[in-house]
Image (cartoon, rainbow, N blue to C red):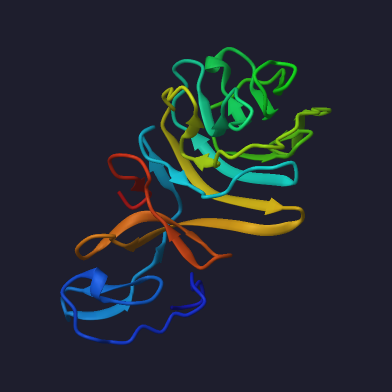
Length: 236
């Protein structure tokens, strides 16, 4: 696997194959030139979504969640929810960043409930820019490129059952998301790292070859596009 191995078990038995599905093990796929199974996860710099591709992290945010997201918006046409989860019910809460449409301020929200009082959010005094950013979000604050934009939130995610998405927001109303690049995402829960996503070319879910995906180093698992179309990478 080399120095930057992506998975815990990189040895792949060189059995004969014609499809990726005949090869067992994480990152195992079929080499069509030799018709043998081999390790196929290849690290890339980023995944690029046009707004229709996203990763379902299979993680439900709670009051102990901290998300560290490294991303780059490629356009901000109107006000958009960039990633996370947005809802206004007692079971679908909010942990999101709102762009403000390029002219308005970045907004951060956290909590469940059907009213503003139940779903706490704060507008910052900073506009989202078209460059790479690192955001760290928790129950009380949003840190944006090392600067605390919002502090003192008091939202409560107790009862939330909705999962956190990256590349697109898990929005109750199904609103669109602008194009973005995803470099990495880490999620901790009560101080324990539960997700550590890195962009890769992984064995295709169907047939042979590779497709863009995220590899979670914590659970040794590939997370594929949960939306429509196909992610691009820096290699495209």
